[in-house]
Length: 211
Image (cartoon, rainbow, N blue to C red; front, side, top):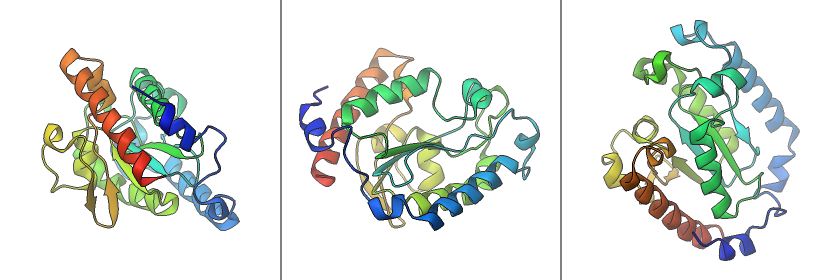
């Protein structure tokens, strides 16, 4: 995947998109309160099963927020989203987009790891207000959903995953760009090719939208 054009437009030292809000004390306080609330949450049974709640990694004024489905074992151990194999695959894709560390963020629909990594729709409904409040505070230009469950959590009316992936859409005042989950790219050659193709489309689309 070519990276020259995007890195020229958004070098690693590029300032955040919202520099004033990025240093706004009230936003930071609100984020701190929300993060503490998530870490203390016991609103569903997953709260009693987790090692750590998994909140977020990234800048507080990101251009792009990636929304995954649920934490895995490594995320539960560390309290940081997307740090296992899927996270490394996602980070490789993010590197091709030329976004600075402050220009993107990563979070999950579920804040706690479900047993056996089986997505829990009931827990997702409980976590949904947290997701909404996170996106409201972060206020990204683009939300990139990772996987069918993350897409459905934000937009239940979306097309099936393989029809929706790689096609930006507007929903509820949010600009969405669905992608298959990076874990899928690790499971088959066909999905690897689809993942890489859609990341290239995202790269081109972001270059035009965020220029």
